[in-house]
Length: 509
Image (cartoon, rainbow, N blue to C red; front, side, top):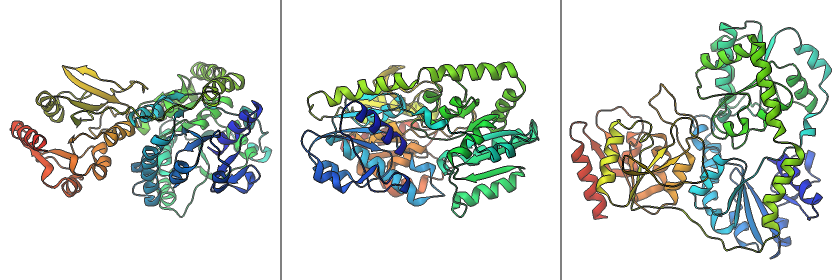
C-alpha cells in the first residue's frame, strides 16, 4: 500500500497537483517522502482533498472527522479477523477495529474508490455512495531490477522451482502452499524446490507452525528466504517454473501480476478479489484441495502447449494494464473528484423489517435452514433473506433484491469459494457489513455459520438465532451467551414450533 501511495502521489504531481503523504509510521527507506499525520491537521484547508488509504486499524477517524476539507476513501479492503484467529490475536482485533472504522468513516467521505468489485460490494453494503472502481496503478519499471547473479546460479540447478512471494501471515495460507507443494513433490516432481520469499517471523505462532508443518509433511528443499532485495526477488522469479498463491484474502493481488509480468505461469486460489486480479489469465482454482492444485502445477510442467497458452493469456492480461492506460483511468476517476464541487455526504444502506441471515439459502435450497428461512419470509412481511452468491458467480456493485421461489433474497460474495465437498460455508464480509448497518431485527438461521459467529458480538438485543437440535456445534455456547432466551432450538420433526416462537418474539419487539 505504501508503494501505491507513492505512485499515486507521482501521478498527482505530474498532473499539476500539490500532493503529500501523511502517515504515523514508515520505513527509513522512504523517510524523505512522508510527513507525520499530525502535520495534516495544521495544513488542512476547506479546499484540500484528503485521500484516505484504508486497510488496517489507524485510530485516525477522530482526526479525519474534525479536519476541514473534502475527503474520499481508497478502500484496499480489510482482512477478515477470522483468518488470524488462533495465531495472532492482536492482529485479529485490529482487523475487527479496522472494519469498525470503515463504518465510522462513512459519514465523513463523499467518494469511495476501490481496486475491485469485491471491495466495492462491501462499500455498497455499508451504505457508501459514489463508489468507483479504478485499475490498480502499478509502476512496472519497479520489477525490472537485474537478478542477483549468485542466487540465480544457485537456483538454476535443474530443479523445478515453485515460488510464493509475500508476508508469511495466516491470511496468506502459506501452510496450504506447503501442503500443495508436498503433494506436487510426492506425486509428480520429486526434483522440485519451494521458495517462499517474504517476511517470516520464525518465533511467532504462525512461523513456528509453518516450520513444524514442513517437518510433519516431510518435504525436501523448502527455502524460507525472509525479506529479499529487489535483485534477489528478480532471481527468484527468473528461475521459477510456476508462481503459487493459496491466499484466502486479497483486495487486489499485486504479486500475481508481478508473476505475469516476469513471464511466470500463475496458479492461484480464487478467493476474494483474486479472480478479478487474474482477469481470466493464469490458472484460477476454486478448490483448495492440495492434490487438485498440485495437479495443475504438474500439468503446467508437463504440457508445453498449455504452458505457452497460459503465458500468452497472461501477457494479454498485462496489455490491458499498461502504464499509460491505467494512469488515464485513474486520472478520470480522481479528476471527477478533484475538479468537481463538493457533494453532500449521505448513505444508502438498504434495510428491511427483518433480516434473515441464511448463507446457504440459494446454494442449498433443501437444507433445513433454507426451508425454515423460506417459511419465516412468508410469515414476516417486509423481511429479506441475506445469502451467499452461488459458487462461481462474480462480485457485483449492484446489491439488489432477487426473487428466489417468490422470496426476496439479497446475494453477497463469499470471502472465498464455497467448497463442493464441505458443508461449512465461508463467511462474507459484505453480507456481515450489510447486517451491521441495518437497524432491523436479525434472525441468524444457523448460529454455527461463520457469518453468524462474526455478527453475534455486534447485534445485541436485536439478534435472534436458530440451531437445529441434536446437531453438533462448537459455536453453540457462544451463541447462548449472546442470545440467551433469543436462541431457538429447532426440532427437525417440528419446525413449526420454532417458526411460531420466532414470529411471536419478533412481533412482541
